[in-house]
Amino acid sequence: MLTFTDRAREMVRTFLDQGEGELEALRIGVEGSPVAPRFDLTLVSRSDRRNDEREVDLGDFAVLVTESSLDRLDGATVDFV
Image (cartoon, rainbow, N blue to C red; front, side):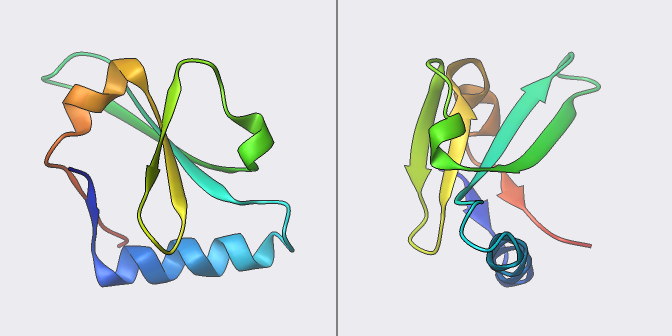
């Protein structure tokens, strides 16, 4: 399960609202080795969903995660600093 801190949820909602309806989801991907992963977070419209992505509904917004990143993000917490 992927979780977000309250601050991260607030910031994602703020950025989505600034997109004036065009941005509807947060895409999260993980690349690189387990020792040095690289995380990619991008705001996108739902029409930008790729065939290899799953949608995770967090209530406030949707998160798109690539199939290859699902296991690596299991148990992760997203925060905003």
